[in-house]
Length: 208
Image 1 (cartoon, one colour):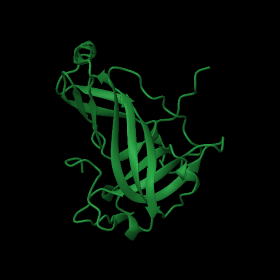
Image 2 (cartoon, helix red, strand yellow):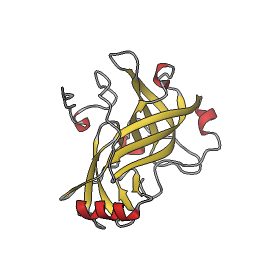
Image 3 (cartoon, one colour):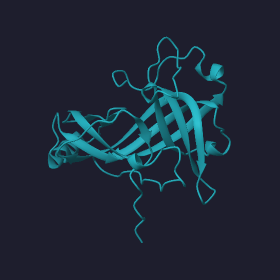
Image 4 (cartoon, helix red, strand yellow):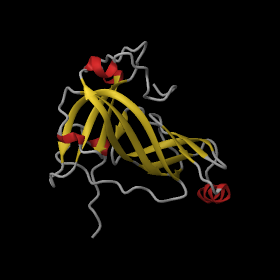
């Protein structure tokens, strides 16, 4: 039986979901992408699934990090990004709000052309549908999703070009993708332990 459709993430406070959303299946398509970014931020919430075997973690990342200063104001929504990711390593069970973490966040998706779109720069949320703009199309595809960049490439360049043509993609086209967002925590500790001497790793340059 088909899994019931979740409410749009835009209608929910990302850190107040009553239960862990259903997982988004990893895309299998010639236009599928996988993008990984390194983040350093503060854990603001962990959520366990009803099954008690998996969960999500919410990480808050400074939007404007200059000279190693990762400070933000919780009253100023424009000073930080919120990332709600499936905890692929089960770290949600040991992390606590207030912990600081360094983690790899991986975004999986599949591109589908849409007539028009609007780029979001508000963060990442597992299971959310994002719109992006194609900046390169041909033997590889690059898409600007606002908060992150997605690249589709293949050893079979001819097959990829055929898929791009079939989808009608070209530079300036808009696409959408329902994205699975996963987090793997590399280390956690105090703010000083995680951010000391760090450089900006997220978001990508030009996406602040």
